[in-house]
Length: 223
Figure 1: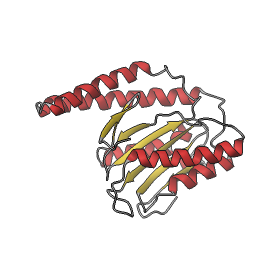
Figure 2 (figure 1 turned 180 degrees about the vertical axis):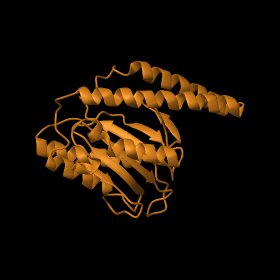
Figure 3 (figure 1 turned 60 degrees about the vertical axis):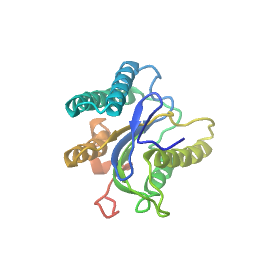
């Protein structure tokens, strides 16, 4: 796929080298395909409007208003997304099982210091929350794009987990939910949301008790 700063499958996506992101993705059977159709339709409409006004050099106030509405709907989408994930009690595999969790952790830290800077991640039974920043360029001087990092992590983890679990075919839903981090407050909230997901689900009392959670101090060290 040609690398662009915006693209879409079912959902619109924005990516830019050097940018921080809050990303969530889940197992292929975690959420019914049409469950979030209303949010998807609204986001796609706003995405189309934003691209149109960008290309016509529209008034900045109009663009900012559309972007604010887009961000609000994405926030509501994430809440609905997470609520549906919490309702699912069984899935094709359990990502929080020791062997599967180890595979995912290795994948999530593989590019640390080379193409990304990790902030936090949490591996739940049927989904993953991940907050990180992509570098402007990789070790070869090439631009680093979000879609390449996600494809690498998802492909590697799916291959090994499928092998261990004795299952075939796609493991992950094709599309990830990604949000561009806007500022330090947004970054703090994304990290807090990520590490406290198991607490919210009633699985542990404190975030650090969940084996699938990692918090980074900015120098690659893990808590």
